[in-house]
Image (cartoon, rainbow, N blue to C red; front, side, top):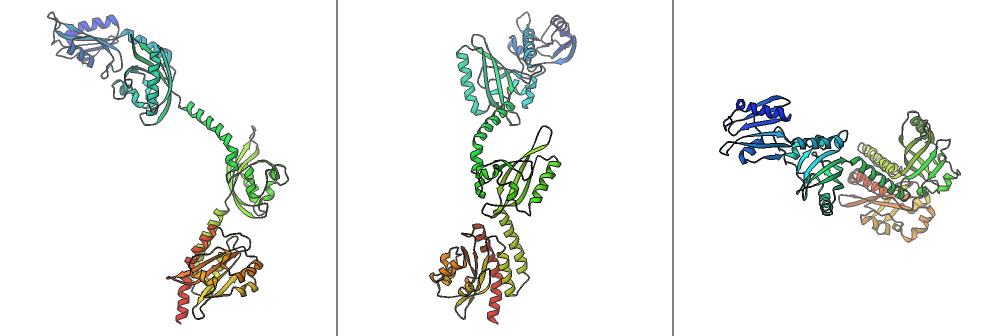
Length: 521
């Protein structure tokens, strides 16, 4: 006879009988002692208890539900109490709910098998707590137990920007008597990654909407493809405007001799040419490449074709329509036909002259510093400074002035690139002259206004278009100036100005001590 103290041996006969009858997992225990668990005709555990068994013993009521923990976590079970003749709960016996199992198996067979879709059953409550989730939820990093135990509420993994929209849409669907619900939104994986999903849910009613059975499918790749396609269409619309207002000139060349152009972007005008100059064949692209660089460009093309490369970069020089030389960087993409033969080249050509000049200036300044650090001869230092600065493109004339305290003037002590006639006119400036006064102000001057009115004709005759006058200041006193000019530039570029000012700061510390020592001697 069963009692509240019955152990596994006393409970075995009734447990085996029921298990044999229903053919389903069966559990039993008494009020005060653990009992048995049976599956597939065998006793699996002789010291068993479970959370639903304990709940039924505590409440005395039959429970049909899904355990949130224990051996049968996530599976529907039915557990009933066993009463004594006095009506006292003395034991509890449970089996897996046959109808629920069959229904769930049917859902899994028809929808989940061979599908990436994750099956959920949610209660229609705030944040949608889960009563069932298929094991393939691991694709999002979660386990079945995360949801069934309540540690993770489904609403908490939905992106906050999407949650209100989903809640409102579902509410409206339920109010209209809908039986299904379809929506796309974003969720967070357990690792924190954002994924797009499509949810197709079926609304279960028991007088009111009690549960939602949902299929959740990862559609991130589709969304990314749609977004990429949308951006591609937008890019195509904007491409012409973007290219034509950028520094990069786009070309499409045929893989033929002289690189005939099939397409050129309109911003080729920055090089002085028109689109028609190239597309008409009047100007083959090869003809604008510096003759010393043509072989290197052609060989690079051939080598990358032979090596089956898709793209390559090369730097070389070209000439603008007015004969100005520029450095360019060409990013080239090789187009091939179905047989793998290179038929065309897509190129982006960018003017990098300023970058090349900046690199050149840094190298000049470094080498000049090394030369000055080992030399104490004033004339040698001055000559090296002039030679270094005149390597800069556009700077084709220059001189160095030093202050003469005795005569109260500044004298031209070395020069390059000017006529002897002009040299005589600028060889010295008295302290009260316009030119000297501007130098005493201690600021660089980049205007032809530096010269007094009586020098205007001489400057024009010399053909000087731009000047750079850099005072040499040592320990708070002006000791002279660097003076450079251009016969080709309309103004001295900012990069060259910065370079000359840096040179002035660099050389004054070598020139001044020698001058001071000479005066003391």
